[in-house]
Amino acid sequence: GTITCNRTGLYHFEGTISFIAAGGTNTQVAKGFINYQIGNSTPITLESNLLQKILAESNTYERTNSFQMTRYLTAGQTIKFIARFT
Image (cartoon, rainbow, N blue to C red; front, side, top):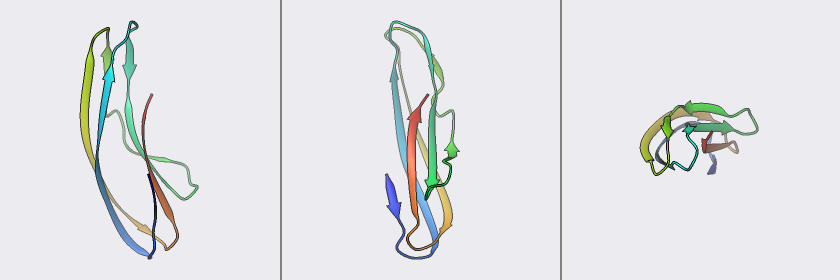
C-alpha cells in the first residue's frame, strides 16, 4: 500500500508478509521480495530471497517474514511497500 506523510520527521515502519507458493506440473524456482519506494524514486529492495525453493508437482511452501525500517520523510511525501514474486 501507499502511505502519505502529513508531517516532516522520522517514520518507523514494520510489518509481516506471508508468501505461499504451490508447485505445478513444471519445476520452478520462486523468489519473494519486499521493496519500498519513496515518491517516484526507483524502488529499493528491503528484503530479498524471502522465498527460494525449487517447487515440484503437489509441493507447497510457505514463509512469513517480518520487516522494519526507519526513514526521514517530509510532509506530503509518499512511501509505498511492494511484495512480489519472480
